[in-house]
Amino acid sequence: MNVDIVASGFGLIEGPLWRPGQGVIFADAEKGGAYLLDRAGNVSTVFEHRRGIGGMVWHEKGGLVVSGRNIAYKGPATEGTTVLLDRDAASGMVGFNDMIADSEGRIYAGALGFLPTETELSGIGGAGRSAPLLLIELDGSVRQVHPEVKLTNGMGFNPDGTILYHADSGDRTVYAYDVASDGGLSRRRPFAMTAGGLPDGLAVAADGTVWVAVAHAGVVKVFSAEGELDRSIEFPVPMVTSLCFGGEDMRDVYVTSGSDGSRRDDAGTIFRIRSEVPGLPAAAAKVPLPGPR
Image 1 (cartoon, rainbow, N blue to C red):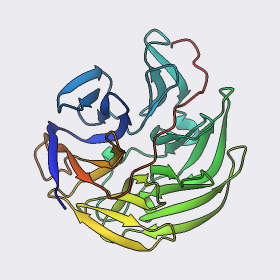
Image 2: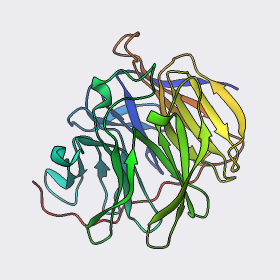
Image 3: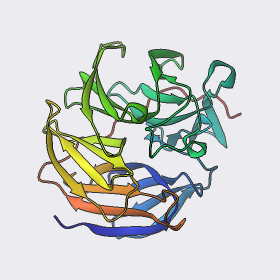
Image 4: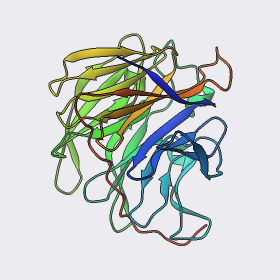
């Protein structure tokens, strides 16, 4: 399989998101900011921002909902930064990482009980306080849908939206949940494990296969809908962080990476490979946008 480099020179790339007609939007969690890699291969700044963005979701009114020390909206619908959900260190939530919108426009957001950038993860799979998986409703209210995740990471839905896959890097495990019509989750069970590395970002293809970026292992592992390992795709860097499907036919797979402490601080790279099957498009958030804070 051909592995092409389409952008490089960043820090820790996270949250890749394909936007039809535009290209791949991604964040540099280490150096800050969100960027657009357009279809011609040019990179431009979407907005300057603090460091620490771990996930991004497109909003139906334009602009992006981003994670980090809070969950906030940045875009044309409001002025400045609009905070949707703030951290609450007293209750054990010091920030937020990956997010995803469901087909209704609700946002699932993984809270962090500790800051991964300040904890050694490669050898032990994460250490620190667990935190909940949250759901931001269409009326702006927030509820807990799973109480404890050791280190929340990538999320994705199966093709009919009845199963949510969620990577817990602290357990080296991707879990599956049944999704109720009201967004509630039940019957959490292990879906796949990633010995030798930590499951990070993930994406789901139209055939139900689950593609998982395995940090510290330099691979993307592709699992069948039954959780069986189908194949591993190797990359020339150890810190593979996330991926998304894109391109006009949704068969381009953009795989992101970053520094793992042993490489230069400009090791963040976006690779592109081709898939035989298309990926599923990302849903847009429809949560309300309060005034900026």
